[in-house]
Length: 507
Length: 76
Image (cartoon, rainbow over all chains, first blue to last red):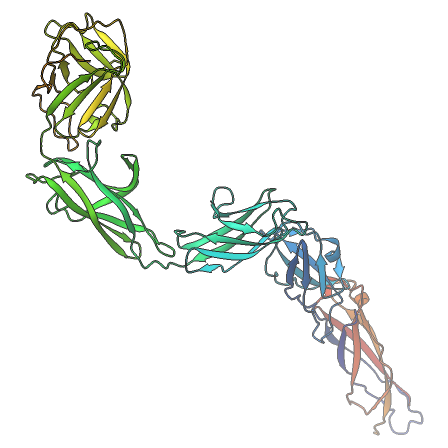
């Protein structure tokens, strides 16, 4: 220690002298006193600045000086984790550093802060404030990070990734986030550990704060925070809408006093889109006065198409004239941009369907008058029927059923049953007009049924027993089931229908 | 009575920090060299250099030390 303290000492000296007439004078003066001096204190350190290069962190700081401007002759360096827990400092910065800079090598991956403490001999000054935090390990830099339009491609670099890694980019979550389109100039990552990269933030990414992760195939991970400013000035897009009776099945048809849902596909757009706020339907042409029926977000499938909004049940007006009725959908986003989309319609059908015809035709090369595999029965209705009502979840495409012909003294009866042959389908029954088609009940399993327009064709499958051949002609009479509906849920009449063309040999 | 002019010899006799026994070993006061002539009951300011020793420990930071000194008049 060479701290100097200046001391002012005041010393009073008294000199005593002998009285008059004394031949010899003597010096007897003496005195004592005290004074104070105060030691200096070691100066505080100044916060170091840290820079990262690979896994090396270089620190520098300004000198800590005593009041007389003398700098201390050493410093200790500390590194802290995010919880401000001191870590072991690498050799080049450990102990007393007699300089104003040092570089810690092979710093572990993580986010760190540093502080320095002045040292002067056995004295220790106050520790400095922490440096700004630095991150060591794989890094990702991208620009820009404040986005105002989408899509936007960001460019930058990755560094300190493991040699040989391939990199993908994910949004907001390194494991499950949406994979972003991007490119890595040097892939797999070369020995340098770095590469130029680009990544695109896509349209429809929500506004706000996000994180882009660069995820290495060998476990490296780095990220960059970005923000997307709301810049949505246009209303949502209503790409599709329809109505469907609440009993489901065929869409686009309602009857007066019938209940129905309104469905819509709505997507907000913008750069980026802020999201859909409300979706409402004006169906006043179907339900007088209903100009803003709210649709609720969800996942709804109608005729194989997924819709993301649906109304509550709406009851159609009554009376309500038949024909096409238009309706509109108004969608509003969170920025209050609204779109009213028209061009949608539903058909009002109040007409009860009836049976028009029944025919049974022989398969090519088959025996006339003999019900056999490949023969076809065709039911013709006055209008298209709701297939879902004939057989649950049936859309009209080919489906397996069972045809049953029951021997009956009043004329053999043909019915159509489900594939498991456990229940009759609501297609009524057909009296084949003769009693000699079968002599016992025959089930034609693996029969197939298809619907096209107003007709349903059923092709016979394999008979459960031998089938005879009718020896003459007859007139088939189809008695329909009132359980069947048309597309607007008007129930079928039970009025029987004779086959057209007069008596003939069926099959 | 005649007032004479004399010379004073100054001696620092002790450096004291009441609560710390090693205070004297942590502080070095450079001896004052020289002489001062002054009359009776007169004052004179002198400057001393006081240094902290390298072996001085942390506890002496900012501490106050009391210096005791003495002086004697000597025959000119």
